[in-house]
Image (cartoon, rainbow, N blue to C red; front, top):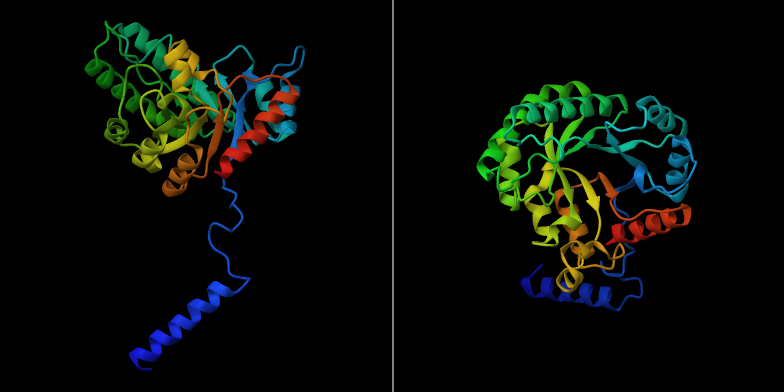
Length: 300
């Protein structure tokens, strides 16, 4: 084929494709359902007098795929194990309930020890629940606790906790919260990499970042370090007009989060895990609304 005939044939093929009623573009194609699973914290279920199993069932009936728990907690562990087994609803994540009150960054060695023991217990219970990811706030920086000390103290203890994570088959997922610590995605990635264990990664909170950054940028930098997600909104307008914490007083999907951009970032890093809602809960109708709203956000 000559160069001239090649060009003519190519032009004819292109014209046919453009004129054909069957021709479609990527924009015409139906949105592809992402392999993301949605969950809510058990504490979001408002049902007076309901048993633990009943609350699990409410979450399941609303359309959620899993539940998040806080451990240790007043609810006996065996009740949670039974509820998960009887409903088939898996534990998507566990939150270490000791990390704020007994931070690993405390200048008091006894407090750090208590925090470390709480972390070990939470890992153990996560393993018994079949949960593979434990949320940990690693440190809290304050006037009394320097950034540098928070960094080294928390890293040291997290490294010591790795064997317990491995035994429980549950990864430690460090969360970005308003603790004045790990304030950039580059530093966040470095912090995990320096620990140097596949048993330590990130629990990325999308809403928490909006106050001072853009979630999609963080996600692309953290990449495969992201083990779990917290899903919530934030409004900079409400923050500016009413005060910092009022920024969270906005319905899911109606704040400043660019959900399509976040979904594209998750696609780019190959994330296929849990999206756990951290928003005001309620009764069965409220849970169903949240499940349906989350499905729409996941379509991006």
